[in-house]
Length: 135
Image (cartoon, rainbow, N blue to C red; front, side, top):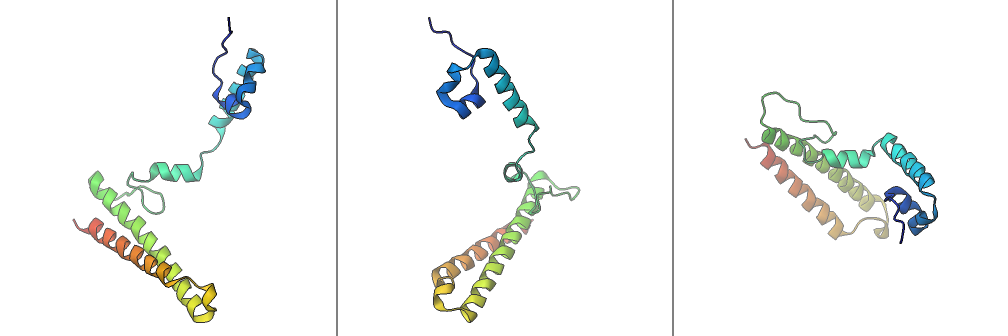
């Protein structure tokens, strides 16, 4: 009869089926050490931001803090700040494209289609800001 070992997901991710060749006591200690290390590691800024996204956080990642707002209104205002940040980033890219068009050779600056796409994105974000700010 096959002696089944407990599941060691972290060890299995590292060693694959070779985990079966380890003594159970050693595998258990290694799995515990990997688990402890994972719990003590600081959370990734990337995943922390994504978890907060959609929860009424402003572009800087902080919650909208104005008093006496409904959660829905706070979400709308936070979305407006994120959209405005997007507009700022897009206009910086458009300005850089304009400078490149003025100063570089034609092979060094973005295509007209890319610039049109940036303008379209600015327009969509501007409409989003407007929708968010209407009471």
